[in-house]
Image (tube, rainbow, N blue to C red; front, side, top):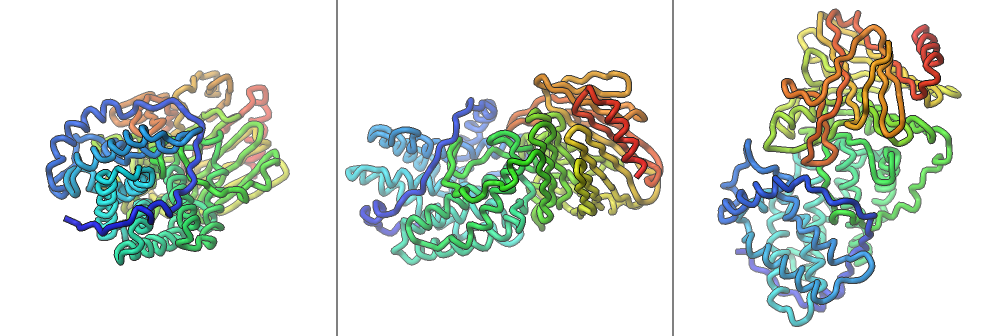
Length: 562
């Protein structure tokens, strides 16, 4: 048993809590209802087992839903009520909930000690409750203080380092700095605080790239990591533990990257893994200190921004088209944990309405076929060769044979933006193939996507366009008409007939996950060509105004002459 040093309560009172801001409320999700029922039995079965003896396999409760409630972040939500501080009786109830959790999950026994990341996220919750306890609640104080110490002790000895560096490391560091502040006067506590600050600074410049993009190639984890850093900055600077001024330029670059992908106030395409995790809790955020990240070009009719390091381009017309183009790497080396094989994939929206989407993540474990599918090349708006992914999946979180992508050409004319890129993910084939994609956008009304291939031998080439589940599909002559929320776009590929697939099981195709744990059928447009690589190409014309289809055809002819 880890012995907890004594900490005077007057010291706890001097530690300033970080600022917590409420976002607008939304309808609560019931995505995990069935999983929680399964999990309760799984948790009860294992909560007296030493954590190393517990194995997750197929079938098993989803590991993300297992850990969701045990982060105890609803405690934070209730402690920091929107309008008024929590009353004494509410604090007592929340403290009793925390005590009950600690007693029901003895240290290192049960499923909640499998991941140091989860321990790191619980420590701030323990801290917030400890700060609010009344003077007469000595027993509760000692139990929570002991939990903070044992959690931090375990985290410090089992951090995600070396090949496993990632957002887990940042979560663990956050736990260490909160615990280090509580036990600052002890040798271990002081070391935790120093170690947390040192690793946070190191990882800031590893996980957030020079252009502000995410090394993990996931927009959801990018938001998660940014919030963990802003939480840390506020806490460290408010208590004068560490000068974080050197971090803020990088963090604000990360915020500008994030803002570029916003379709609505808090909504982005679901690029890369997305598990709906929070730094603080649902609809809570730290003070993001984003005053100086306002886009200086936000009043322009069209904004094109490329992120060379992260490997993304975004074309945003104020009225009309919003398009993202992925020409980046697979993910964060060496394991590429949260990346998807989505090189040269696009998403496309009209007036904020989704048409061509990234289908999402669904789940991390317990449904291995779906995990494989949602990470796969076939599940993205790009081309799949010989039925293979652009890289090789080893496990649900580890890739092999990572590809390289390159944005070769950018041409910005008065009314036209042209992007040309390639990737070598199929260079590993016995007869290698390089996929080239050129995207040309004119006036935000027309988009021409030209796919061609260089390489050797005969292959099968599959083109996919994944549609928002609410899109209605109709065929009118050579045009595929897509309608959603009163908006219409038209897609034209006269030489190829698209298969229209919805919710197919073998092989999986036509599935969508709007949030973690939720699975819905959607429609996928699927086209196949077989032949010699050098002779194959897909030319897809998209028109955002059904009154201008003749102009769109003229635009296509002119572009193909170049």
